[in-house]
Image 1 (cartoon, rainbow, N blue to C red):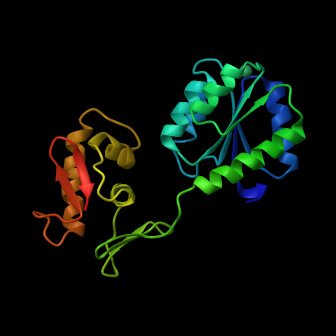
Image 2: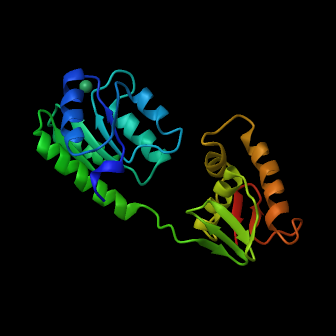
Image 3: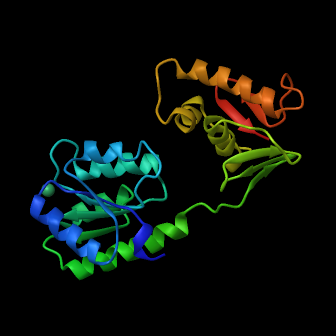
Length: 230
Ligand code: CA
């Protein structure tokens, strides 16, 4: 996994530090997006493609780096996060790593060391990235590369949201997923009334994928808890 097509998001409110980071990464061919706050950083996770690695300052206006780290992790378990701080207190390091940061670098840093750390966290996150083997359940097959679902080889023409919900269930066979969890897969956030909306959504999806939607085999309801595949 080498530089060039991996997108780096730099979250840092100090312009000179941002400049130093951008300069070091640009030399190595990394495309860089810069933002000054955690709130701006989170916007970049609402859309695809989102960044592959985040360099995240702890001392930020508004949401601090720890809070931003936690929120990014909720959205993207596989992303590489490198925390940046001018403080060297060990408790900061522990707190950052507890929240799911991959590594930690203390300011002022040597630009070459920063790039080396970025490469190292990318290697680690690549090992965490879920495999793109197709998901299979009975006659259903979900191709994660093309985002297409097939039943006995016939394309089911699922919408991206239907695909996301079905993929979430097939990734965790036998495990009950709550309406909140599934709502996040479908809409990316929890909305008021989304539990009911999700039930309607599931009904329509069953019509597309189940032999007998009134007696589903793939998406089963678990009363009061959510849905389960299998
Ligand atoms: Ca700062």
